[in-house]
Length: 344
Image 1 (tube, rainbow, N blue to C red):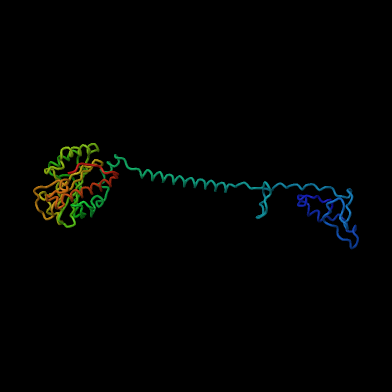
Image 2: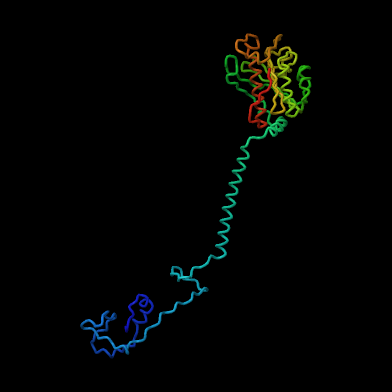
């Protein structure tokens, strides 16, 4: 080659043309002469045994720098071929659409998760007192009877001396009005709040020696009306008077068949103030014996009391079942707290 430029770029651009240059005739070299070296010496004088350098007039002119061809946008590059500088393809419409869908999908998922979290937070918030009171008015027809009056009620430590008690439901009365459910004076005392429905069930203890009727009157009163009724019962001791007793539900064909007014031994009346419900319970002996001196449940459960209702556990039966049924009605209405009410 003649006048090789000693640069790497020149080698890369013109090596093929220079190595295949045939302008030097083969006749200039005699027979048997060694081929000319492909790389001339780097100094002013040639190495011993090499061909002397040619004059400057015989050197070919400098070859221009090969121009860079403009990229052809219509040609798809061969897979695996290196890309030219500046030939990076812009994202197409499909790629942009896919990216937009991905961003939108992530946003929707995040929004759904946030909405679920907010909904869970809202559901976890306790209901207002107004909402609980309104729901309590409808529990009698929105709640299964087995939730309001369970088939079996276990009273842990609520019997005499802290003994456990178990009560089994033996009868459920059809829901109806409040007529013939109370002694006349008790009916008059409760008439101020009205009566929407009366629900009743009768239970027997584990020995079948005691029977207890539990009732729940759904009133028409508002919350201030229930508060006023509770205050009236408390200040006038209406829940302890023996002429203001609830009547039992004596279902035929059950151990409570002989449970009449004369067999009432203990009772309690609860005026609930967070829901429009009056809960009561009245207990007696299953053998039909007459009780001449009934005793309020709150008095019969006091330690050291030796009356027949106290020693037989009838006061504990009335109080324990009234507590449980009142709690079940509150749970059905969504009440988060236990409200204090008058009791006897």
